[in-house]
Image 1: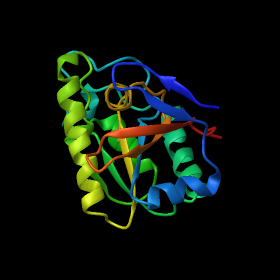
Image 2: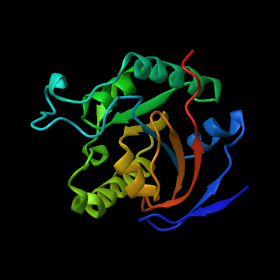
Image 3: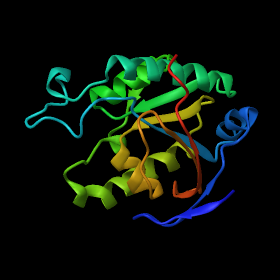
Image 4: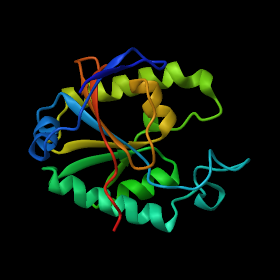
Length: 190
């Protein structure tokens, strides 16, 4: 089943989830990236006066969110993603999600940063993310690309948001522009 998504960004073709072996194969092919919204963090946005360097001032993962992130890491391995290079927004809820996937070192990438409440930055953020994804294609690391970010970033990039821990496999062109997407619901945390 295929349908078009028409929200903000150019319309992208949404496809049904791929087979278990295809997710890892598509990521390994170099023309795809996997974006993931951070795991469950109750609330919306961040408290007034939050600081990026101080997790106690931010909205953070719940116990269920931490379990959800670990479950996603296990699920990704079962889907043919044995090794990954994980990039994350500098927000604590994204960094914690990325680390709990258990793929080793996590690299902070500012183009994955939230712009919630400052929506005028959306187009600029989308361009920065496209440029980052284009660089990933030019400089392959041999590890599969997993990018942990926020709902607003995913929405700006592919034209539709994502729920907590939802993943979006994005086929991209040489300029890092999304061509089509496949969505993956988070696995049960149990």
